[in-house]
Image (cartoon, rainbow, N blue to C red):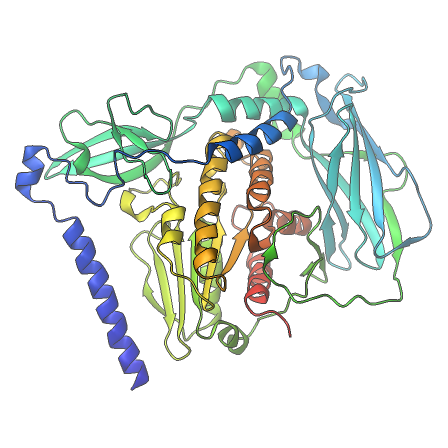
Length: 535
């Protein structure tokens, strides 16, 4: 009887939502022909963009000041991974778990001349393939061509050093210039429809309201979005959105060389030992339960051992059976807002628990709401995309992309509520400051949520590594790394659980926009460890 009651309750809920949506979009022919805007479901077009400018400016200026802006006209003078060297400044025969290994990198250009400035982008790892163990390293830039890389020593046994030059400072300077000044590399079109008439116009976040535009900006979230007005139809006819690739920025010969595949992720050559042997300390350290708390960014958040992620600050549990997942999520309402990597978490949990009923998935997997309910144990699991920009070649309903801050503001919260946030991958082609402004507004919404219901758990996920592909100008991991830096600064001090997907995927040596099932399993185990801490 209880399941029947839940079933009819669900049907009534979905029907109510559907009727509301149809009512909101039921424009009459008279309204259309009269040219009335009729956009009651669109954001307020008279929005006053209320962004906490000072905080966003401060964070942007701090990160911007640390990014290299060097002459990239001479390829020969740029940093060469093949010519650069690393060495151990304090080699020892007595390394123990809990120690920190220091490595010095000295950089040289392609003509063999010593570099005297910084700004290079490295990926550093310790690994042991036999033990299936890995961790990332932290890079400190002395801004004179020398770098210090540190590795916490987490496991007993051999540890092999891998340091790769992902981009030279000159290549980074090109990417930075494109990010800030060439904002239409990934472009959007608005599709306006009435009857048999369809008109397409350009859309973006950086048009001026004084131009001949339709302003679909949102007053509550501060999200700016504009489309050129169509020649015949009105702004109220706006229906769909679509992303497409603009013509690539025309790189000159020197810039092209800097970003050629042969100059990306090149191994730095060791001057001396490239591995060490680590002994185990006798004392065992008992890790505390994973708990949401005021967030403080850490250089290293964990390591892989025997293929399993081990957080450095808390005890991660494994939830590999349906029973364990259900007992953890019993009575919970999980609201996930983000990109396709957080949707992977939703898909993993639905597959892990066969008793989940997928109530709604929509026609468009990438942009439609995903909703699953486990009736017996009263579990709700929802995923929705964050707002614009959203990069997909599919035509999708613009109204599906509600700003993240608005979605948070619509949630009352409480002890049974869990909010998951993941924003980053769709923002890399665009300037950094609007991304920071978006995060600051989201943080403001989270503060309000936690003020009205402090028992609500908030989990934030950083952006993971991805493939080194042909659209490097859009997708370089350097762009992702800088966004993650900004994310950590924005959310510093907020009571959250933080899952550093960047650190996880670097440690696993993963180069995929959508990480493997095994990595997703470990990320979800950490997520559930925050929701249901070990006793």
